[in-house]
Length: 236
Ligand SMILES: [Zn+2]
Image (cartoon, rainbow, N blue to C red):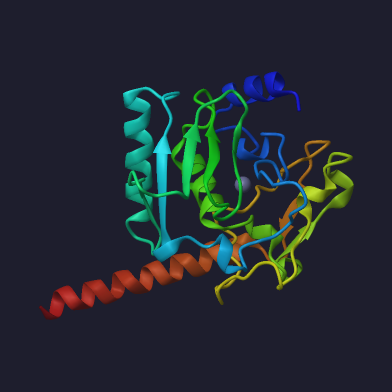
C-alpha cells in the first residue's frame, strides 16, 4: 500500500473532485478494512453493537477543534437515526478508536470486538459526509451498490474499471448482507459515485432508470407536501 501517495491524493481532494475521497484510500472497496480470512457482512449477532450504541474514543491525533467537528457531525447526523454514536465509558471493552493518520479514510464493517480502528486522515477526511460514511461502516453497513439486488438498480460498466479494481464492485449474497427491508437508495451516502475506480474518466456505474425521473418524483412529493401545508395553514 502506497500510503504516501494516498495521503497526497486525499489532501488535494475538494468537493468538486470526481470521486468520493473514501474511494481513494486504497483499501478493500476503497475504505474497508477486512480482518484476514473474513468476508462477513452485517448479518451475524457478533457484528452488532449493543442497543445500537457505538462507543468511540478520539485519539490525540486530533486538535480540540477537529474533535469538536467530529463530535458535532456525529451528533447532528445520528440524532435522527436509531444508531447512537457516543463517547466510550471507561468500563466498555468494545469501541471505535478514531485515528488521524496519513493513511486515508477507512473502517472495518460492524463490531469487531475490542478496540477497532477507524481512520480519518486529518488532511483529507474531515468532511461531514466522510465522517458519517466511515462511522456507518463501523455500525455494520457495506456500500449500497454491494447489495444483492443491485443489478436491478444499477449497471456496472466493467470495461471502464481500472484493471485489478474489479473486486470493488462485488455484490454480496443475501446470506451476508441485509437491507432491513429498505429499498435500494441511489442517494445513499454509502453509494459509490458514477466515476468510482474509473480507468478512463468514463462512468463505471450508472442507474438503470433515468435519475431525472427521481428528481421529478421528488419534486412532485415536495409540491404535494407544500400543498398539504398550505391547506393546513388556511384551515387553521
Ligand atoms: Zn466506504
